[in-house]
Amino acid sequence: MRRFPRTASGLAFAALVSLAAPTHAEGDAEAGAKDFAKCRACHSITAADGTAIVRGGKTGPDLYGVVGRGAGVEFNYSPALRKAHDTGLVWDAESLTQFLADPTGFLKTYTGDSGARSKMAFRLTRGTEDIIAYLSAVAEPQPD
Image 1 (cartoon, rainbow, N blue to C red):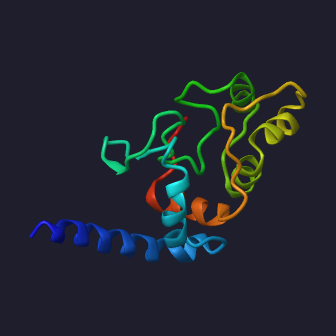
Image 2 (image 1 turned 120 degrees about the vertical axis):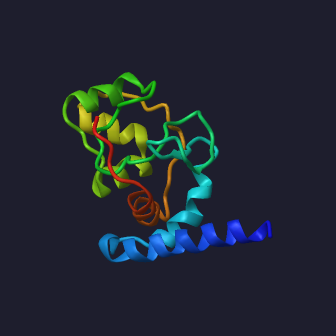
Image 3 (image 1 turned 45 degrees about the vertical axis):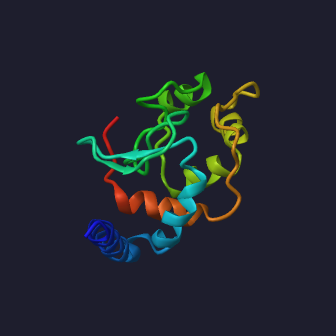
């Protein structure tokens, strides 16, 4: 009997991802769910009501609703990321792809500040579009 809740939640997640797939044709949300394992060391996904979607680390921000949200809100971000927020950066597929490939390089370019730095040292070189599709599928954007 203990396996049923896990199986049921797995089926529910698979259904959610399959329904979201046409909307996020650029990436594979199901593959992104698997690839998100790389992100769990620093990030979690917790719904607005406190429900843990993915339990993960607290070093980085909660990624619930990140796609479509203004950058640099609700976390202790670097000054460069807060500056990007102040100038209107909203996380979409393009900006997230660029940021994840080279967080500090992206912030230097976006802010025009050669001294800009990101606290995120990890660079995601493959599977970015899948992770973005997954993040889009599991949460609605949150207002900043």
